[in-house]
Length: 363
Image 1 (cartoon, rainbow, N blue to C red):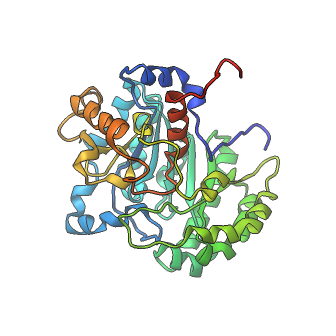
Image 2: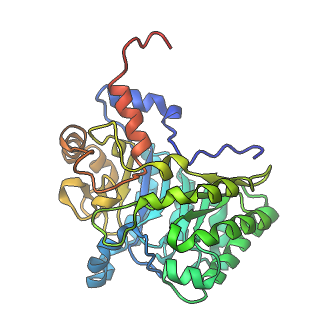
């Protein structure tokens, strides 16, 4: 694809080696990225959702699990001021279900942040869409189906959600083209072999036809706290379809299969977890965690934005203690709740930095 080099399957710490060296030398570093879930509320109930395990808490007290406008905007301003590079709005629920998300995106952009957002695409509104697209690095639609019937089974929303999301997807492409915006408009297709494999190729063809920048295909993130699951070996039957999907890449469209993730079955060379130093996770209740699978667990919580601001939490003894635990005591091979974790390639790289092979001077 001309002018674009997407890499969704590994990591990008190669371009932040100064921070890696600081971490390796035991110095305090500001995370490169914050994964942000401004709310746990969602208009869908996807079968694969990582945060299924938190739904009972949300139902019991829904107001608790959405950031206040004040905290939301301050987080964006503080992150930019402190040197955070990016905000990825990829959880916990549907970020556009939070009424202050458009303003927060624009605020974060003005603060110097690169901002991306994942959305089911149903809650976009004409009143603010163009301004939001101007402020985003990317917007990624989670449409993991082809047609309303399949979408209803996978995403468990309203019966016409596929049509609504697809219409909004096309509108984003139109605005980008007409206004010559830099934002990348993409699709994430989480493949569930026994549910949506038949929709994969139709969606790839459609995405290319309407002018989407990319579509990437990823594996289900298995989390031990959730009941819904399926054998990951089912992915072995999908290789032919995945390779065919890749053939639809062109000079203006990229279809990217996350092969390393899809073929990964949970094996790890690293014993501990290091990635949260570089990517931390903010939840809708204001808590800041190491990563998504450990929301609600005090041992993995750095602090709360209603009690302290971001700078205080980053410099706190609590962050040091949590980091020390996951980097020195926590057994990632035996205790980690997740298979195919998105931190896996980062952890592998950082483990190798700490455990170099013999004869390193013979490259």
